[in-house]
Length: 377
Image (cartoon, rainbow, N blue to C red; front, side, top):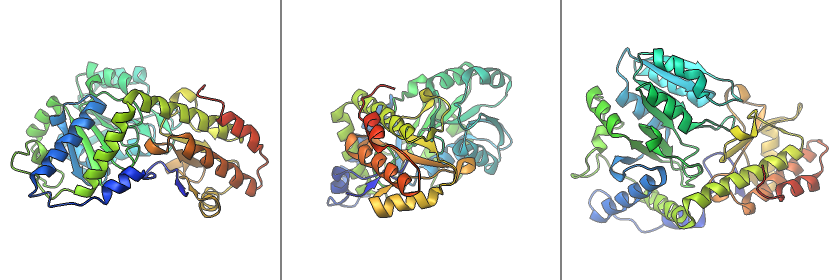
């Protein structure tokens, strides 16, 4: 079996593949499709603590959700605070600029999370109405403290927009912590092909959207506010079928068990790769995401050649990184279906064998013992 252990898109489970191939009708005309949509919407709502009617699922890679949030919420000339410790946090500020806002970027080192204590004064002093943040910065594998930052943002009276694309389905999230727009995608811990954006929008954010009056069409969230007359454009029944299959599988396992499993696998992967002598990118284990682990490569090993060798020789695909970590870091995605012993043991084994092929002296047995040692951190 070939293994996709990248931080998204991820390995598709058999039940997702089966759902993708199910017979379809015409989603514009078949009343059963709306029933399916509402079912998916309600399961997402249960997962993240949102009302089902405040959840939107549309066709488009998750980046369309980030852009839609900015397009629908940001007024020309107004300041928006972007909290960032990586590539995608920076991207939020760039979107603000492109839509006529004035981004104020507050930056942390890529190895460290956003610090809610450090940002409170800046939030209180700013006239900005909106704050953006990425929950899990996948290039570094750092998980930001969502609940604590949300609390700081709410104390300052601002709307909070969160990119949760690589954390939804792997990490406990509750929008009632104070998240006004939460953006997710289908292709990471939900293990569905890229192509669906998931958004949860608070009542306060809907009022702001109505006030901003964004004039575009495809990304216009108001088109999704009331679906009594149908969808604003044709949806994807195969992708929605796959999402429903994935969500039902997650609900059967139980959300608490899913989140525990991700933490357990993260701990195992980190222990094993540390045993190879590779250093975790997050400066502290407590900041490491349960959905993706990033490690610095030893000097002299080319990340592209290493990853190509793993894929061609051992049938395991892992990721490189982006931005200032590009060429220096490898990433292992343990997301959803792949956050299991069945997938991660051969992944870390293949990594060890590839590292030995590239001349690194390691003890594979020690790493396997570290991996199998249980869920201790």
